[in-house]
Length: 106
Length: 120
Image 1 (spheres, chains in turn orange, cyan):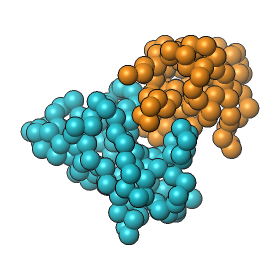
Image 2 (cartoon, chains in turn red, purple; image 1 turned 180 degrees about the horizontal axis):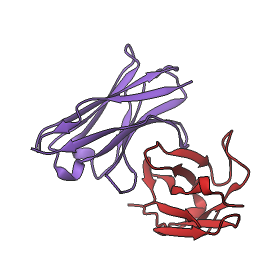
Image 3 (cartoon, chains in turn green, cyan; image 1 turned 60 degrees about the horizontal axis):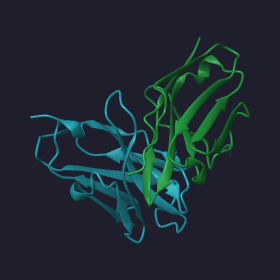
Image 4 (cartoon, helix red, strand yellow; image 1 turned 180 degrees about the vertical axis):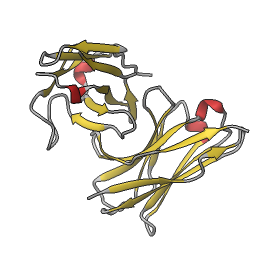
């Protein structure tokens, strides 16, 4: 079965750029989606199909995907960006989530 | 505005069957554009997809849970349901329902979820 790997945690200084990676075998050939989940809340889609932002998601959120790594980039990080982030792909008609990354804004 | 609400018991005994329903409001479950899915999250852990269903009844499941899972849809009530059999403590989780469109698209609308504890 297909697996996605994410770092358990990423820290970023307030106002700096955070990068959260999602690794998978030839993930560049798949469409990657990213979700933000704050404590006690349902996940929110922040990037879909590698690099597209849903309505209402700030331009500070961007995504890329190539080779074996997809990346969620959060520019000018704010305290409100502190959350868990999950990547997700489809593989053979099944949904696969990464293990999640906790983003801490210092 | 689409809303999804999970209903069902919060406590299930080991070896029994967990049964939950997701009630959809603000949109039709019979839309030809969408699938409806179940996702769970054990306390303090990550997301795990359980399975998804189309309004026609066509469904597909996480291979690791497939032998124990049944997802069904009731278009007359605008809801879909989850049954997970032979539960153990490892099935204790927040169970959520969500919508995704066809073609490998993401879950674009989520319900808040319901905590189900497996304990005697």
